[in-house]
Length: 98
Image (cartoon, rainbow, N blue to C red):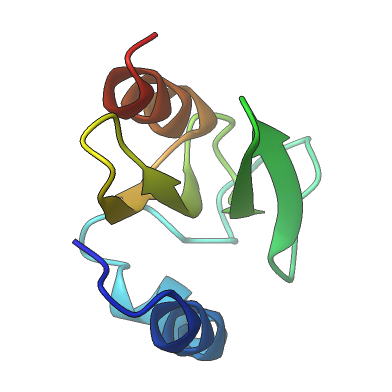
């Protein structure tokens, strides 16, 4: 749960530089694997159902780091970290009641 949106946003944005290495045991972030798609070197922006998402893709099409701060139906804000676009979309849907 996020209680200070400004502080949380600043902290997670600052973490982007090392997030790939910090999460490599949880998410395959190996860029050497033969992959024909584009590997994003920096985090990029996306939106889904009005929620701002930051993401970074890796060699396998189902591997990425996606994060967002989501206001749930209960009025609380939550930091969501996911390993693919599908997972963060499903989590946003659940928290927002879709």
